[in-house]
Image (cartoon, rainbow, N blue to C red; front, side, top):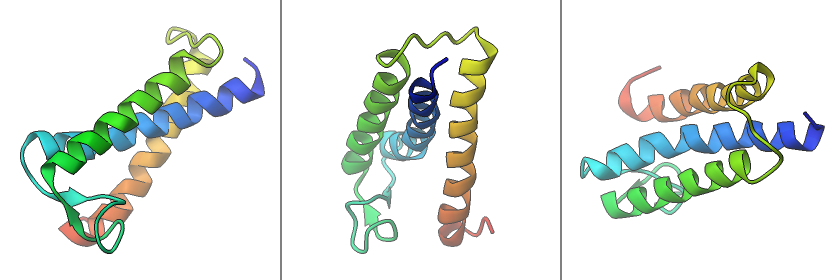
Length: 104
């Protein structure tokens, strides 16, 4: 795996992890923090904004994983790099959103 492909897979995993809370909150009709709220990342955005933001993150994650290089989910190194990106993003999101929902 080339270094630039590894970077792409790492961020692809991160974007996929970031898509989940936004997309799921939007699907369930709940407002949720987003970069488009006021203040950004702290205020609540509508469910529609979160569905759209989550979907955009899914598309970006897809493009980074499947359109850069030759991502093979059965190759341990490819899956590990994408998983590391997803895990790091999940930990960061748990810290950021935990402030608002009592998770810290």
